[in-house]
Length: 131
Image 1 (tube, rainbow, N blue to C red):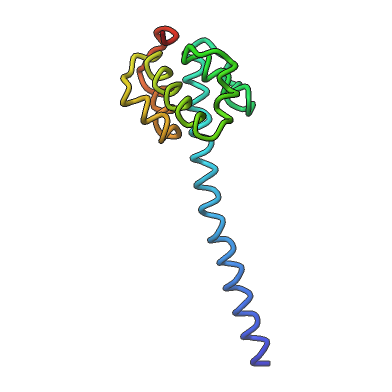
Image 2: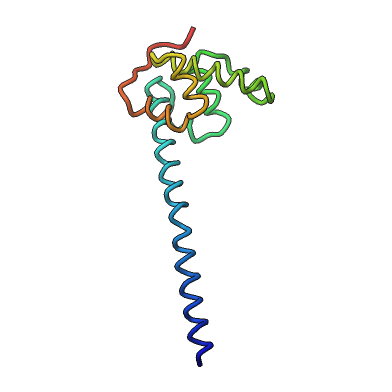
């Protein structure tokens, strides 16, 4: 009988640990929803469909369009070192399209999950496609 009590105690501890392990999942899910909503708003400010953020390749093409870059630049994003440089350039031009500076664009390139939703939910206005 003593073994049964220990087994029951061990089972309850492991199940509470499993529930505790779900907390980071829900936190990450909430952050993901907030980022999607922020990028959605940023796209809509530029006159693009917000739902584009949900379509994998199309969202990058819309991002490039807002930045004033041609859609074929998406191919360049797939090339290892070139893609990193092109991504930074596109992020800077994306920021400039909302009246922000190059520093903000670098922020978008490296911390896009923070900087793009700030554009979406903030008072930044889409001015024009970057030159």
